[in-house]
Image 1 (tube, one colour):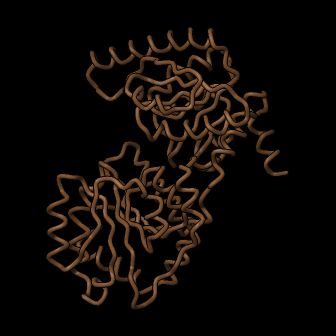
Image 2 (cartoon, rainbow, N blue to C red; image 1 turned 135 degrees about the vertical axis):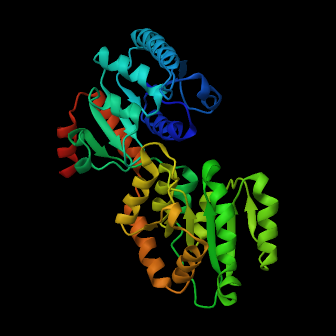
Image 3 (cartoon, rainbow, N blue to C red; image 1 turned 135 degrees about the horizontal axis):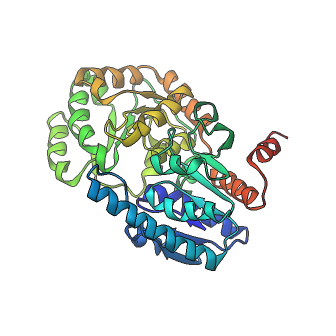
Length: 369
């Protein structure tokens, strides 16, 4: 039983694990909430169970009371589902939709684990961490978390397109050749990049500016203004709200400028591309900053707070890296070394170990042998 919902960010690693487990002969059920039901049609589950859940976000006593009522109803329904399906193991993937089924599993003493994509544990996972048998970490460090003895670093499963793109080696740019810059930020982050990147590019020396081949994600409502800004400085830029071939474009880039959500950082690392990471400053728990710091510590990226990036500073960073191809080569190698392309297999191995009753300490000992 895989418990995931709320957003695609929680559902994707669950989907990757489901494919791997099914290839090993497991029956896989999905426990999710109403919001994620629209994603569930593509999920490789033998059965899908819709379980009520709610987010604890308001300080209003009435709203908090209603949230706890919903969570309690979800727990009761999850308990009945578990009693009927009798899963050998339950795996949660963070977010409040994970709470009712995983909490119910721990109450029924069903082997259980949670997967945390980020470098800091989210609130729902933290509420469950003391009750489950293991914590699989995307970027979590056993040395920096109070539940370190339970943490196994598996990485975050990535899309097949990313694994394919990872086969392409990094190609350093030549001093006078084209410099391919990829900029993307997700729905919450694209606004800052739409406002900031074009003025920084305009501030570059013309000899550098004319070498740039830019691919930039931008919201549809920002697209016309952004295209006009680039036309004004003589650049024809590939701008779109969405790139279905983003993994390929990442592999083709000499430099990536992006936000630092868990999936983004994982994909940059697996493909092995140098990045300037600008964490979304309003992210809950500052998880994006911690994700970026993890890749920066491996030498694969630079972390730059949004508040520090004036037009002049951004231009200085881009110019400096365009003038230092060997630094970009080193960053690409650092990112690649930090990537975990086999994370779906590692997560499946851990799931099977917990299902069989193998404790985390014995599992870790087996990895070392």
